[in-house]
Length: 371
Image (cartoon, rainbow, N blue to C red; front, side, top):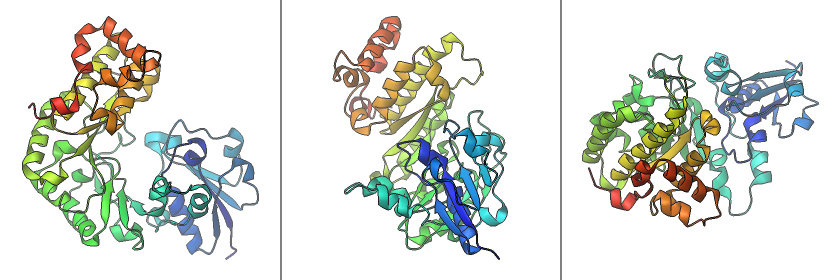
């Protein structure tokens, strides 16, 4: 068989200056071709796409720009959720279930890693990455899995685990909804490696047995859940109560993704925005009471909101744990000085909606334990 020279483009890496996570599809494609005897290379410049027999391009994010002339190349195959969102075609089975080529990014990392900055590239150097399960039954309208009906086992751990890498990172959509979660998790625990679920877990369905087993392992950093809808308040609180009754004290710092800016009616009328900001801050307050970190996830419509500045300010406050844990939103804004935009956003918003003032003064330490 004639050996091919294969170029692989991670479009998110080229477009997003702070993107520091490898593309799993790119690594699987590279692994597949290397096993066939082909030469593969990560293409890090759109101006250097010549000389390849075949080029693959993948992107995860829909707003990642790709030059039109690249997409017109005859030897190019492209894909990923960044192009097709919820209708992205899957990789062929022989590629989907191939061991990723974790060396694909090696030259890129060696070239760009600055002294003392190795942690910034940890997902390229320290982690085996894959899906233990795929799919979700929730069918959330904002999610790329909205066409999915259930969570099913995907790849066995040994299919993507490099034994020389000390950590595991799972990209599962809703692992705890998979009926075979326990034997799969047992394999993870038996590996003895530290692990994390990158996309978060579904606290609403979590049972005592799952809490006990998950937190018996070598967890890597914060365990992440989601609090996407204020209507889930009661069940989130019940599950947090169960969690704190079940899990040892040294595991008690959780992080919650907090989605904002998504109107489930699909209308985004003017009165939606103020209510959404109220609901977002109320969810933050609930999480403060349970000692949880809040991480604001802004839906794309936030950028067109008349209160775009408030969404930016709230996310900057919450998404910096050192600020969130020590300062109220008001303190965070005021300490930046009157000339800063965040202070102006808060002042103008409070003048228009003084009934929301109480949220601007809530503090993690003061709210903690009030439930």
